[in-house]
Amino acid sequence: MKNNLQKLRKQNKLSQNDLAKLLGVTRQAVSLYEQGKRQLKQKDINTLTKYFNVSKNYLLGAYSREEILAMLQESYSKATHYYEDNYYKVQNSIAFNVDLIMIANGEIEPNEPYLIGMLSPDDVIKLEFWQNNFSFIFNSVAINWLISRPIGVTKEEVLKAINEALQIEISKLSTDTRERTNEYGECLESPSYYLAKRQEFINDHITDDGTLNLDS
Image (tube, rainbow, N blue to C red):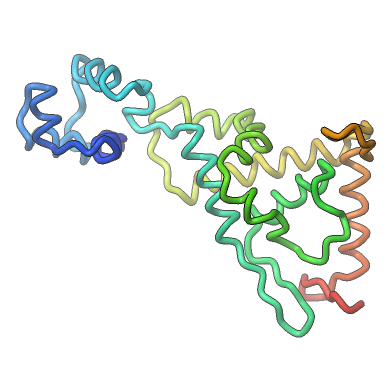
């Protein structure tokens, strides 16, 4: 069964022999623990969670909130939109949904002439930005399972859960008619207004193959 023992050991620059001494077992036993071929005993779990200052669930294979946000950040940063004959083409649905949410929140103009990749490079590289603006994904049942249960899932499955959480948020924002103010006290339209304006812009410029014609 998948666990995070090897990850924790390497992060703390420990050898398998170091862990073997800590647990009072052989190096071979540590190797089997890390491969998931042998289950950790409760006393070893207690020792390791205390030593590494992590939860039992995380030790046994659950994801941390930071890891999931980092996956969201990485997915966005790797999104590419390539220019071809005045068209920008969508290649990452997570990035597309992130931008829609930031549009709904009044952080990006609805008529931005791109389909993805609208965030500034400075924002993208800061994990704090993702924590401040996208922690709502942890309201998702699927995401909560990932951080509260040591279940073995692939990175692709995690990204799918993240994208579903983003889509749920967009659905909520599309019916939110509340006007707001920003941190500077300036009035903002409602999230549903900005999303509607974005859709109008896309409808006015979209082509049959799903790209935006920037010259139309």
